[in-house]
Image (tube, rainbow, N blue to C red):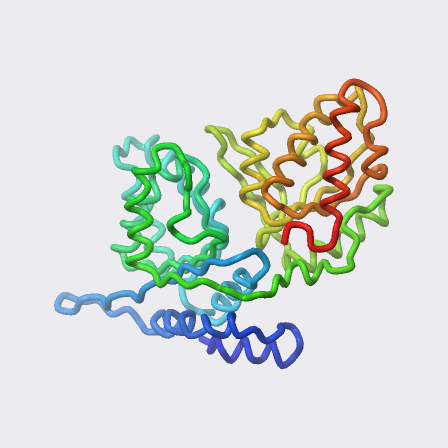
Amino acid sequence: MTDVTALYTARVATGALTRDPAQEAVLPEFQRIADALAQPVRKGLFRRAPEPPKGLYLWGGVGRGKSMLIDLFVEACEGAAVRRVHFHAFMQEIHAAMHQARKRGVDDAIAPVAADVARAVRCLAFDEMQITDITDAMIVGRLFEALFKAGVVVVTTSNRVPDDLYKNGLNRQIFLPFIEMLKTRMVVHELASPTDYRQNRLGGTPVYFTPAGAAARAALDGVWDDLAGGAGSELVLTVQGRMVALPAFRNGVARATFYEVCGRPLGPADYLAIAEALRVLILDDIPRLSRSNFNEARRFVTLIDALYEAKVRLICSAAAEPEMLYVEGEGTFEFERTASRLREMQAEGWGA
């Protein structure tokens, strides 16, 4: 077990991190939880397990260092049963485990699934907690109640204050007790740094590479390494009962090819869910668009609209400049708006 503040200070000393008072202010909360997890859990006939510490709900704007701090906390807790996982991926695992439990004839599938999670970990470290799917909203209350009761500590980041989770969602009133439980069982802390480090790393860096090819791919590899900071793993979103997968995801950054995102029969709801889950999308190999790939072109227009409205940063390689991507066939007039948005999204500081 390592001191969280000492780790942070060491990274600042090497230049890997820039000292940030807002980040430093939350380090004691991480240390409080790390210290509690370092204590052995003693259970016996006449000795109750110690009350677990309150968790931490760290929220704030994009690029403020929330994911970095979660990584630092997990690193400091090496040796403890702490699992770092993206919230969407965790919920996908829960749905799959509940499905298996029901196949075994279990009526209340949440109870055994929560018990399995509690046996495996003492702390769940989530990145990017957000609820967009009604199936998630319907089960998180009972799931987290069971986890908290079993002594599992939850540490999570989010771009939203707890009261804004599942905002305007269907049957949201059923979800409200979960929000109150979070505020009771976790310390809610805003990471109010004025600096967007993700934008700073992109400052002066091209975000639209053309023509697509080996050189553009190598450039996007470098951007991915810088922003994601790791290999990444598949992100699976549940949208209206269907699975939408992005092959590589880490720290709010996803990477996929054009055909992995626009070559499949996805619709507006899918692209809205993707935009909700990401802060940056790295998209490889956008081709020239025409009547020969009209369906893919139409989906690409919908994707760009969703990313634009959600202020998701797009970094991509393409066969041509935006104005020359779609030059013939039905839809060329409508594509002018998409080309204009692609130009606007290239501006330094866009989406900040």
